[in-house]
Image (cartoon, rainbow, N blue to C red; front, side):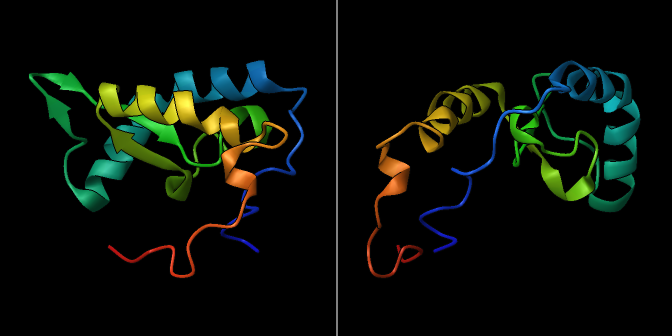
Length: 105
């Protein structure tokens, strides 16, 4: 159930602007604190990677929770952002059961 219905029942939040502002204001400090535990925040060609919110801000994700932000290259972040709305789309591919063993290679 959690694998095939992971995010589809979260409504959009009314405080999205606050969540985005909170992340924008905390981003630099967040990266420093993250780096003290995991090593320097990754970068490519001197450009820091984007912080992707696993539980997205628009549906209630915590803006600065360590376990909710994953550093990803910009190109990958664009793919995540393009695919993620499908999770909330009625009849989308994320609402159908996947293979019997969803994490096998």
